[in-house]
Length: 104
Image (tube, rainbow, N blue to C red; front, top):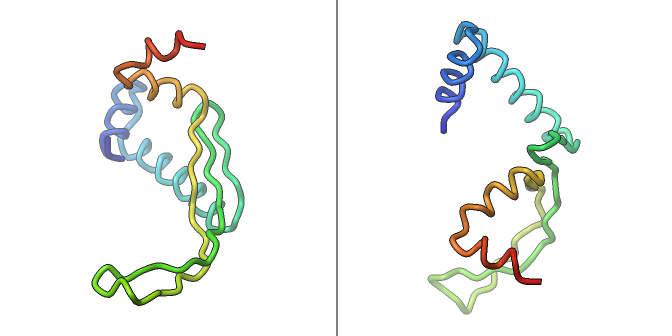
């Protein structure tokens, strides 16, 4: 699903003009991006949590020259943790979920 698909779907369900729906969605995404870029955690109930984590520095390897170690510096990355409802909905896609859910 793209942002455009989302705009069209919301516009059709609410009767709002697509330009207004697009503006609201874009502002929402801008504010989420701004907050995460500022190091804040963004929690959207029943959807998930966006947060910044700092990866530790580590040593990597060049696949073309595996004998050479390449230092990879620490860096900040965005992590997303899905909410319970989304996690459960995605788990239902697993073919054996019904069987494994019954086991203790």
